[in-house]
Image (tube, rainbow over all chains, first blue to last red):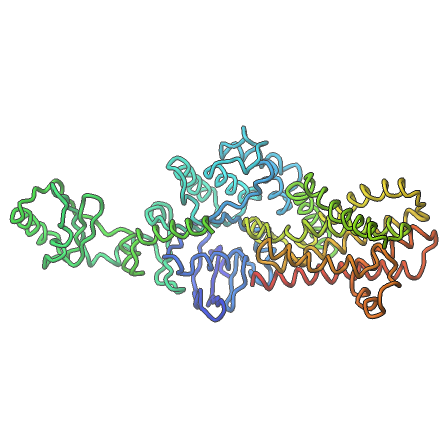
Length: 328
Length: 247
């Protein structure tokens, strides 16, 4: 185990009834970094997180967390972990205060520190005034904040955040993103799973992309973006949008067209050649260009290139999955 | 080693305390624990098959059986359904400690239920408990064994109705086969053999010993040892089942 690494994963495989959920993956998370873990639904993200946090056992391979083997020394490893699952898992029947005190007790936080720490965290998350209320009466955003507070009660060195801002309002999302940055500045290693690729791009120093149980890329976001720079992108909007996607897609110089709101993103080989041709296209079709910009490839473009699945599809799948789960 | 055990016990106690707040000390749980045993008692007594001398031990054991297993049987599976069980799994705690903590909550609940039933029963029936200390010991071992019985149903089940079905499958045959309201000797010999595999038989027998005798008998010691073994085996099995479930 390198002292540089908070998490080391080697040849990790997990099979469920003969089906490979995670196949022979190897990667590491450096100490003090925010590490993003991206992938479409069913790619093996959740299984990997469950393996790394000791919630399930691998079929083969090794996991080291804070230098401890997650199988043989799981209690030692877990002492260094804070886990925030995608669905808030606080006890609805007891108060916010009791939830935090119970979490502190599980990690044997000394008695005199427990109450100070609980007070500190409830104040930080804006929940102190509601500390005696049953957590079941909290809004989704408040429950999320309480879940994160419970994961931080023992000051873990490594924090797992699984879709921390999923389904939250803008204010709560921004608060959690800022908090993630602050925790990282104070020395915590963050393992972030998110389907908001932009969020990963803003927060993460390095990102891994998993698809069909295999890691397809691990690098920093800028390098991943650079890897897809063979395509350049022009974003253009016209005074009308009807039937334009099909017409633009048939243009010889455009390899791909994606409609984003009232704008069209054209993947081209060379923007300086494509822009005049696009102006000609507008003139020939009686269209007025409202705006035209060249874009650098985003992390989303890298994601799409590597997984073959658009982030919009991924987000939609995620929401549909939640609706089905809530109906069930 | 001793420190690790002490650490486990303390964490188990915290889990028990939390479970008490979340699941146990609510009015419906007390009434459910009392309602079925009392209904069964009335059914037996109306049929004229009841031996009033046996009622104190039988009814107290039944109340503990129904009271503890009703909630224990769903205590793990409910947490699995709501996702809070993963909070426990993610913490530095062994599965056995989690199981022990859950069983401890049921254990304390069983003690309270036993007190709620035993004192009025003794007063009303005019029964004299010959050795109160032996009665307390029998109640404690009974409560732990029944609590562990509920846990194993909960560890095995994937959802609440399955856990309830399993616990009923374990409980109801015991009511009729363990000599609860009638003497065990009145059962056919084959059923007497079956009764020896059921914890309720030992609970009723131990409580009857403490009510009827002031001295420690060989039967009483054997009953307590068997109840302790039931508890240990059921708790270890529950932890193993959970381990398999999460693998």
